[in-house]
Image 1 (cartoon, one colour):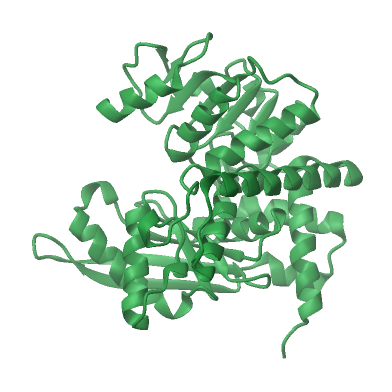
Image 2 (cartoon, one colour):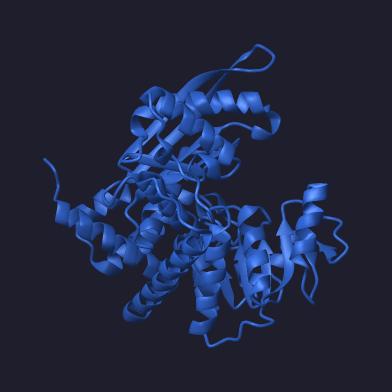
Length: 421
């Protein structure tokens, strides 16, 4: 393995590209299609002013990247953070292409972000920034073009502002331009819990595949936001034992299992998981290498790297976050025979439910939550089977199998459509 710096290792675009190249080689992908699929089709960079509460005019930089729209409109979240970079957005857009193809839904990959610190901004400033960002990229948005969704530091309210801004410009209400909206303006039941529910589904499937019992299966979850908390609650209901929760400000451990319902109430009251009496406080880094059957990194990128992968003791790593494992760490986990459920499968419950929301908006008919959950389960269980079959057939790990399956599906579509000249 070539020596690389940690900075190179944790660059999300480089990590994505390394996995894409490996999978494309395994597929013997045509060189022309290789070039088509390796790079984004469009990268939009906008610099725009926002009037702040104190009267100042602040300039912001925003991105929207379309990786591939061969299989349908672009689909992907918008994140607000001070460390958003074009490389990160590029990588996330490409992951969305592969994620949508793995679960076989008719979307391409897109992603967006604005460089800002939302924790230091008022609600009014966030609204004005969101509406101006939307206006700057509006010609590239639309139910048949590009359909954003919430991501890091964005939520249902953000999507409502985007939907309203787009609708005002179109002079008609267009609910299908975004997903992850509030229920009363075209949101879908089950959407908020969908990523966590999808994690529970693929963990169930992994245990069946590995002939491992579910009851008492020990789980550590890194990240207790929407994804991690819903995964924890739903998995506990299914008989899993959640023994550890790691957050950015510290972690909790209880070998006998943490009461997730009680922890959610504590977090709501106090704004943190720390101080919960039903578990012992431990450093989050220790939890990443705790003895357990399943480790679920469900927060941010690059939490499993060459620095800690050798000490991972979980039998299964289920990636609730996008890009939590670096390519170098992948090789280490493979040598240790860790069963990795890759992000483009493990957290695809969110985009699958977004697809359901888009469909419901476009047909003007909304489903019961039980129907949403049943359809979600069917798609993710079938996708898990598709990936593991690919893994066995090509003698590769699950991540490369997922990439191969996704690339194969997108490449097949491009071949069928042909190259417009």
